[in-house]
Image 1: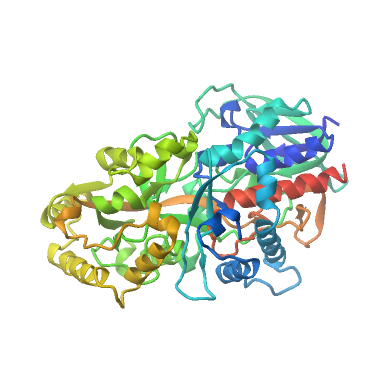
Image 2 (image 1 turned 45 degrees about the vertical axis):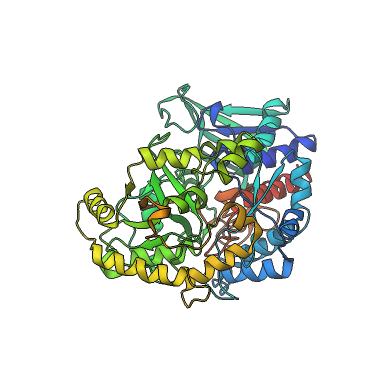
Length: 555
């Protein structure tokens, strides 16, 4: 045996599993097709949000949360409905979902602190939902931001892997096949790729210079999802979300291609819920890209007005920051919109400087660099944070103007399809503005803004006082063209509560485990149809920890 355990993938889930195994005295080989610069995977690039329930940070901000409320929200969001038959697709997913919420309401924060993770005092209210008590969405703010953003989560585990004598990191090793012996997985076989010193995230060479085969008592698949391969995304795109876009931007590096998932399926591993996916509707073309088609997601506050490509205000639940897949369905299934792959935010300078955050460690230097003084200056200052202003100035999707007439002309010029009518947009803005400056309102977005301002965290950092967008004192006017940005795979390898991968008959495959996005964040779909945000990194942490501890007891 070359090691006790082989882990496929050097992202967060694989590193957490490795950490647990090393602590138990086991020898680990981590095989990764990219170079050493990419240790930590997608987590390094993320904003780093973590879903916690009834935390001290919430309580300090006056938020009352509980396991019961969080579990209600999770079930309403997940909507697990594939529970019939001999081996239901959602059987283990539902169990993993509950186990994760118990973890988030229990030892998760203390365990993360033990690993060296520290949190800012900021708690965000992400994915506010479909506007019903039992439906999708977070009833209260639960999005906890770590110092270091995504690097603050991934780097403590990456550092341990770099430093541990019991961990053998095999970069530029691409797994092409699982090795079976008498029905059990006993190793991996694949190609050695040519050395490539490209920076983190940059697409690397696929030139093959050799072959390898490694053996172990068990193998963990922690290879991630499909978000970097648009053709795979389109292949699994569900009818319930309408027509897949012809043009999307890419929220993950190109090597996040789902290739290992197909290899596993071809070798008898059961994949479930492959049509469940999570792609954001507020994507921007990155003016300073790292990988091909690099997209950045806006994390919006609640005040921008959202228009479709034809200039009509989106119907409910199409509100900024509320219901990601509900909005995606509107944009991709409304008959006269399917030919257009974009939508619009219309806002002003007052809104952008406080309500626009950009997802990504590199887009948040204040939090990533753990600079409290810069955090206060940028989040509470007179101007938008520097990266937001950079996008406003350099980004291909921004239009800035002093008058609405100029703004609409610029929007039409940007797209070249002349779909937008100034009078129609003016009427909608005026109707919105009459509601938002009134202390009483029947407008759902206005009610949401008022609700947001009741939360101390949003009042300080994320939501501007109610005002009319057409009031020139808050100018200039800004329009932002929004694309679909690919991101997460919600289905994957079906696993039991120890992370053992199952076969088509629903039985564990000896020696094979799966963690992270490759396992649908647990059980092949712990999120069900929808995510509550702050739960992707958390799912990698939880599944990696679970698999590492389970394996430590059997190898």
